[in-house]
Image (cartoon, rainbow over all chains, first blue to last red; front, side, top):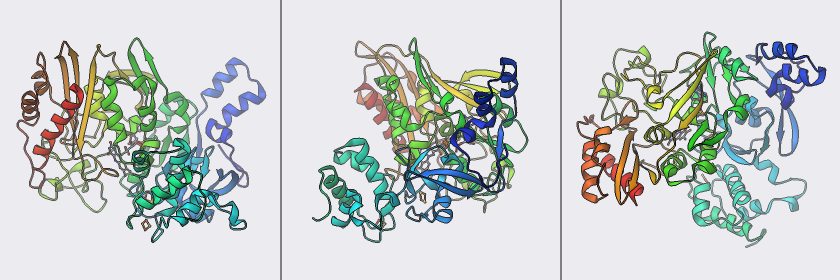
Length: 207
Length: 326
Ligand SMILES: Cc1cc2nc3c(=O)[nH]c(=O)nc-3n(C[C@H](O)[C@H](O)[C@H](O)COP(=O)(O)OP(=O)(O)OC[C@H]3O[C@@H](n4cnc5c(N)ncnc54)[C@H](O)[C@@H]3O)c2cc1C
Ligand code: FES
Ligand code: FES
C-alpha cells in the first residue's frame, strides 16, 4: 500500500487495507471481489511514513518508522514526555498509557499498532492554560503528596485512572492489583491509594 | 531494533501466505518479539502483524462443553470470559492473572504466551554466545548462573519454558489449530513442544509460517477442578520459578481422574502422569499430596544454584492440589 507522504492513514485503510476499502465504494462483482481478496497484503516501511494517532481525543499526525514504539512516538515525535522511558522492556510501568481504556506498556507497543485506538496520556488530565480543569485524581496526587521523585508518577496516575474508571470505588485489594504493574522506588503506593480513595469519594484538591 | 517491512494482512489466508516468505516472522501483541527485536536477537526483514486479524482470532465460544479460545484472546479477556468461570478453569484464570503485570495481561495473547521465547539470560543476551540456536559451543547456564534454570528434562541446554498458561492448558487436555498456507491442522497441545528439547531445537514445533489460530479445551466431566500454584521471587513483574497445574475430577469424595503438569522447571512444560496416577481412586489427604509432590520431582537433577526449586516446587504441587480439592 503506498501513501502520499503528506496524508494520514485512516483506521480503515490502514487496518483493513486499501483493497477492502475499495470494495465498499466501487461495488465489485463476486468474482472481482474474490480477486481482490487474493491480492497481496498491504505493507509499510521500512522507511518513515505518516500515521494518525488519536491522543487525548485529538487526531495527531506523526511520522514514524515501523520499528518506532508508541513510547518513542509520544516522547520524541509528539513532545508528549509525560510517559517515561525507564526500562524500555515492560518491566517498570513508567511508560503506562491507556489504550482503549486499558493500561499498557507503550514501550512494548509499536506506534503503528496504535492506529485506530483511543490513546490517553497523563497530559490529557491537565490543561496548563486552565488550572481549574485539572483532573481531580491529579489534584489528589498533589494533595496526598503521592509522589517523591515523581519519575513513576505519570504511569502511576494512568493506572490509577483506569482503576477508578473500571471499579468506581475500588477496594484496597483491587487498588493493589491495579497498581502492581507500576514500580515506585520511592515507595509511594500508600499515598497513591489514598489519592485514588479520595477521588472515588468525589473529593478534589486540598487535604 | 533493525528496520523492517510491516505486513498488514486483511485475512488469515493472506497472513498464512505472507508468513512463509523468507526472513519473515509473525507478531501478535509483540510483548516478547519486540523485546527480542530490541536486543537484535531477531532481525527479520518482514514482520507479519496478526493484530489486524484480531476480530477473527479473538473469539471465545463454547459448544457441547468444548471451549474454543481464539489465538489472540488477551490474558485479561481470558480471565473475564463467561465460558471460563467454572471451577474446571479456576487454575487457567489464575495462571493468566499472575502473568507479569496488568499492563502485560491487557495486551499479551494466548498464542504469544505459549510461544514466547525462553527467559534464559544467556540465550536472551546478544553479548553471550551459547549453544542455543548454534551461537556458541556450550550451554553457558549449565556451568554459569543457573538459579532460574531447569531441574529436569534437559539434555544439552538447561533453559526453562516460561509460559504460565502452558501447564494449565496442558492439564486441561487442550488442543490447538494452525493454519499453514492452505492447510489447517489440529493437534494435541503437547505436540507444540519438542519431544527432545535440545539447544538446536526451536522452543516449539511449528513449521516456518505456521500460524496458531485457536486453542480448544475438551468438555470436562462433572466436578472437574483445575488447581494452579506457582512460586516467584516477586509478586508481579516476574516469571515463575516453579509452577504446577493439576486437574482432578471428583466423585463421591474421591478423585476419579487426574492430570499434573509442572512449569518453569524444564525446557518444555513437564507432564507428570505417574504422579497424577497416584491420585486416582483416592480421597484427598495431606499424606497423599506429599507422596504426589515427591513423585512429581522424582529423579530431578538440580544444577549448582537451583536446588531450591525442589522443595519449593513440591510445596507448589501441594498448594495446587489443595486448591483443586478444597
Ligand atoms: C515484565 C514482564 C513479565 C512477564 N511475566 C510473565 C509471566 O509471569 N508468565 C508468563 O507466562 N509470561 C510472562 N511474560 C511474557 C508475556 O506473557 C509474553 O511476552 C506474551 O504473552 C507474549 O504474547 P504476545 O501476544 O505479545 O506475543 P508476541 O511477542 O507477539 O509473539 C511471541 C512469539 O509467538 C509467536 N506468535 C505469536 N502469536 C502467534 C500465532 N498466532 N501463531 C504463530 N506464532 C505466533 C511470535 O512469532 C513470537 O515468536 C512477561 C512479560 C513481561 C514484559
Ligand atoms: S519503560 Fe515501559 S515498562 Fe519500563
Ligand atoms: S515517586 Fe520516585 S519512583 Fe515513584
